Length: 72
Image (cartoon, rainbow, N blue to C red):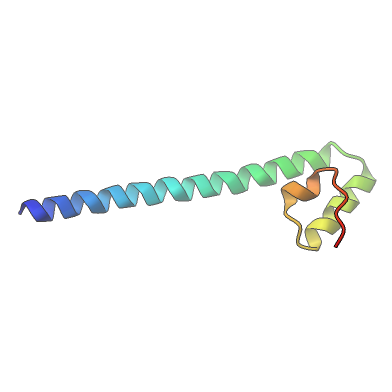
């Protein structure tokens, strides 16, 4: 019986850790898109077009939103 209780507690701990990890990953993605969007809104049309082209080429939105000159 004690082993069954310990197993249940371990499963509950694992479920809680998984939920925290999923929430953290979701929050990171949301914040990245938020920062990229706000950076695009705060720049001129030329920078917006450049950022959009970089994202279409596979550069992450957070890097594309920065004023970097990336060469492929």
